[in-house]
Picture (cartoon, each protein chain N blue to C red):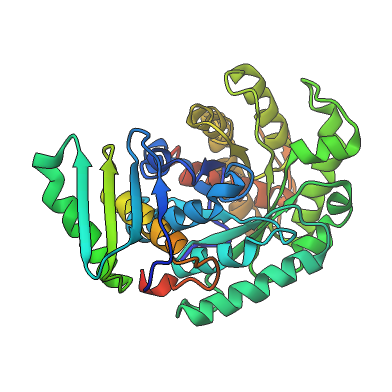
Length: 97
Length: 297
């Protein structure tokens, strides 16, 4: 999936996560900010990479600002940001998520 | 898969816009959760709420609580994608807002069938709930109840209805009496369930109990909920008392015995009992058992 422009998903509310995505420079670039980075950083990274793979996103810059979100919230906010960045609004690939 | 006749004393609305509020909702133990994609979600966040909904339906265990989705109206650009996401994630049912004619149900059912086929869901597994919020909807309540085999219940939404009627809220519910009566009549005639509107004064527990007692006595099956603190009050009203359970047991037992001996009418306490009261007694026992107030023989 090709990203056309920068986009965000989520919020910085407690229990949520703000995900910023933008077209990359030929590769994946990932930045994670979280108060619980030492405990959950690798788990957040795994969730983000799995979701990007599932959506076939290979060229993007992704910034994750975690505020204590659970796994499915991170997935949901990242997917939202990706769909927005790819201008996908209808006939979304729900079965593939 | 959900059952059309399951217990639905409380149906709790949850905004899908707030991530923190939707994942732990099962701890409040409503009978049903209605994930709201409509009024509680800002237009700019409709897409985000839909994706969040998909992920909680797909990945969160709601411990057997029914999971319904209130989609956006057919007069918006959102409703078809709402249905695709909800069905793909395996929701138990769709609540259709602002229904006025059977056509409003038919167009939703068509999209639900398409989504069930597209995402390999069992055909017919997604139930439908009809929300009635206008005078025309109230007038057509029976036709709406019969518009699809998937319909398990109809509900009254008082906010929009009151505005359409130019009516004002009263503590005794008089302003809603005609609509509530027509709805429960239509539901019973059609063989579907019937649910009351939300009590919007969240901290008015006395008013909530009075309102709930009224609709319970009228024959409603449950009530919509906007705050978890309302759930135990409604469940209490909808749970038969020990005396009601005892009397229902006696009616069922005596009707069974007396029928064998050819007796049609008899007394339980001070009440004259005949066979017409059997169905009501059985309903009280079913409600008591479902609510955990009766464990069976």
